[in-house]
Image (tube, rainbow over all chains, first blue to last red; front, side, top):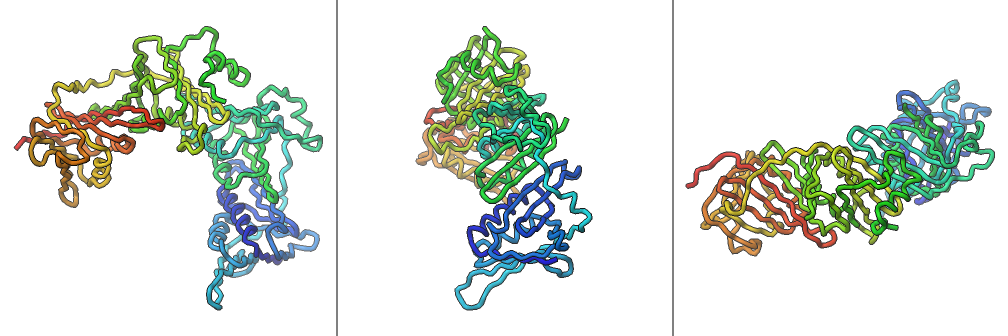
Length: 285
Length: 298
């Protein structure tokens, strides 16, 4: 297995750094899948991480000037690594004004992603910073655990309000309660609710709009079509999971939306031009 | 789109479609207390200045709102927000009182972030309603078209301690510009268990002393200092106050522009802070503190 990539453009580098930083705020450890066209950061919903799962998709051509890889085999042309995004993020932060950054899969004392940054100098002597980030190679037989999740058969799909407003509200609600109820209907209305012995707080958002999913949307039985447009679907979630998702967002995405399967799961989707992030928070009783 | 001019019943109507049943207002429902503010920060800021304990006693009278917080029966803080600070202030009884969790209230008031107003019109509009004994305090907050409804449970109000501090018993009084006291407080030796205040018609006039690990320190203010607005001391008095009790008052000091320091014949301390809010209106926060140990006058 071989992998090497090179980023030259400063804007691409900054963008890549931001994406990694966002992911590092969402999870301590995740799977990085490298394919000839894409990079995927994947977290599958295990009990140990509270059942939260994540799927982040980057098109390599939008970030890398050079990108070469050789996967497990010609049929399974992929590389699957377990990484600590925090380490990647820390390494990338030191490369902010680098002339070029290379990312390479290497074999040191253990498998590593080696990030090499060529820093600008005034003299002719070059300055190069190298970070070796230990990774774990995931064997082929376990790959099936890290497949793209299907869009759940949601009852309501709705655009999210400005994430900053939502973050402020969720931050304050977190001080008051451990759980939050997300409610939404097909009339573009969404409520965030908490209820405790001391206080009940409901924030009402309206005119958010519901994304047009068309027929190919829900791969299930089209629960949204049978749902009363006025009725609120709801899911009660661990407020820390939602807060984590909101803290990570450093740039306002071009589209932010949320699918709710009644009492089952909240599926959050952020679309940037060349990055998409999906985040699943399971509902709790 | 603010709802400050909309009558309350109309406001409820526009909520009715989205609000759960429990938050709907019943027809003909009477609130004993309704108050609204264009800028919720004008209330939350002043409440922060007394937020050193969870429990606060609210007392509303036709003159305005008084919020009281106490600690260990030795310290009492009162925030006074006059009725005319509010855009609407309706009270149907002579006195409406209840106890509430102040930390929860502050989280609710700042639900939209509560950051400084950067763009005009981006402040949080607030409406507070209370139906009476046994009912929650309901807050309606609106910012940029987003509405938050909070229902905070209330408790039976406890009787605040009467410190019996009346102006006729005041022996010494000074009014200072807060600036000068902020400086002193930021440099106070916090390892000292007590703050000793000396007020006297003669030298050293007004002195703050600490007795900490690294030695004793004295802060003297001459009576004709520019920082001294008023100096009325009739008798030399030296009293000690627990630093831990005085510390919460620095929150009020930070917001204030003037502070009046008074002691009475028993050595009780009254600190009154004059606070100007975002809109230039004036509110007061007052701290009462018991003396720690009697020090014999020399």
